[in-house]
Image (cartoon, rainbow, N blue to C red; front, side, top):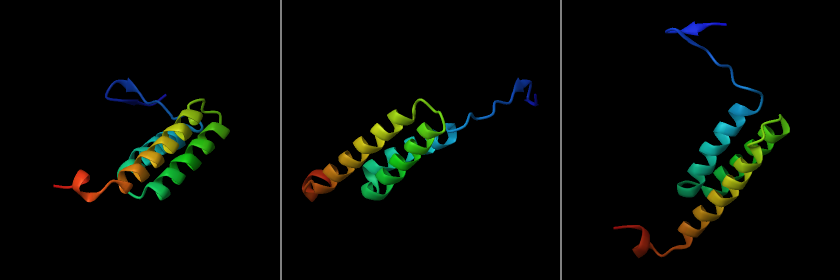
Length: 83
């Protein structure tokens, strides 16, 4: 096992990288392009779950919530979301 500055280097398990990127996409879906990033987060969550990452379902749920929040914020009148 390799070490970096005395600590062991951990390798990501199958599906873990997809789950991490799915959470990032779900967070971006709230503020930027909710339809695109929500769909990307949903797809990455499904990939993670298919590869055995148990948190993939939570990532898919977070992507749907991010998508809905992003669409909801986009529907608000400008006087509520800008200065």
